[in-house]
Image (cartoon, rainbow, N blue to C red):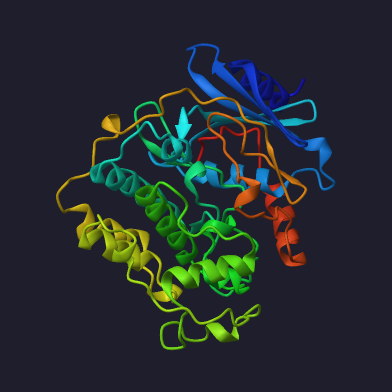
Length: 374
């Protein structure tokens, strides 16, 4: 046994797998613990041998970006080790997610609670964007809630860097209900504004306690958006009619947000409207959002420890299939997935250049190093 094997064996012995909480074609997720301390963790076992090229892109992305991101509002990757033909990701254990809290009708949200969840979401996202990482799948069940009330952004399987503004990217990302119109129109060049649109949809969902823009297909999603916010004009969104998949969807009048969000403050509606602007370049950034008057007005954000919590403990859920490719972040504590009814995502890469780049990243990943090393 060489030094690398010995180190991997020692890391493997550090963690104990306990209850299986989900299984899919390519991954099994366990509730586990650290042997020396008893600390609870989530262990995601990825069956590397199942993949033609050796390792699925979502696994590569998740390891790559979580090793780079250390922030109180981003899920922590604690360790990575191999076992036979499997790759194991050790993630911090989280009790529930924002979707569960929204759906729990026994809970009552105060405006200060919503403000706290939004502040933590923007803080985590600002850190991602400051490090040139797009999440590309923000939604309530990818915002996990720790036992102390802290919200943490999870599931970086669709994340990617955006340091090069001229690099072509796939538009087949972000679960449909939270997908911005530029992606629905096929834009291949986009920015951190796509994540901001998703946060706007989550903001609205927290107030409504139901998804705000729930389309049944990509075309219906556009109609749903335009019915809610009005059909964009060329003045509002210059150049959108030239996007690759643009089709006229119909003319719908603009409805004031106040008509639906009747109890919201002026600052609340102002921030929401800035997240849901059609022109991506005019959407508020995560950094700007954190300085918006909404967060400084009374009531002040609730302390995380005082936020509503689910009345029942999270039950294990099966891994979901997404366009025939398993979403390996959907089973149980610390890991979530898209619900198929919210629009399917493609885990496949859509260009030879991105596939080549992915293989290059895979070769550079050294899973024998500690997950929290620089």
